[in-house]
Length: 84
Image 1: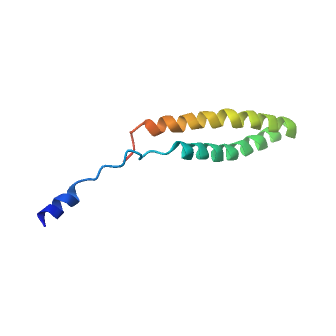
Image 2 (image 1 turned 135 degrees about the vertical axis):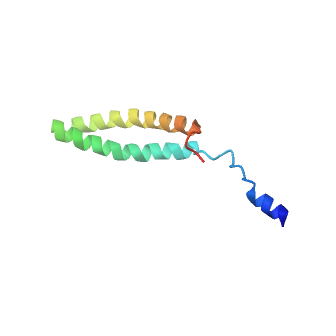
Image 3 (image 1 turned 90 degrees about the vertical axis):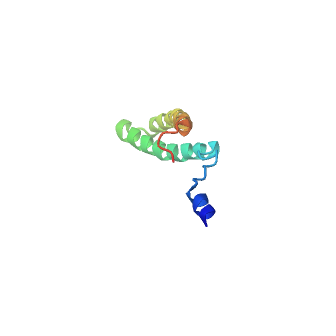
């Protein structure tokens, strides 16, 4: 009985893979950027009145912000602050 109590009180360590996998960060980057790019295209169209120009802005924004978000996610994944 004493050993059971002691064993239950010992906190099991988290596995070393407690962070997100790269593939998960990549998929989150893509899905978030699709939503963000649609927003950018709509705003660009409302401002410029030209669909072609709005699509060009959206395409450039898609590539740059997806890359930045992915790097941001991976850097934050390495920071232990705020993780259990």
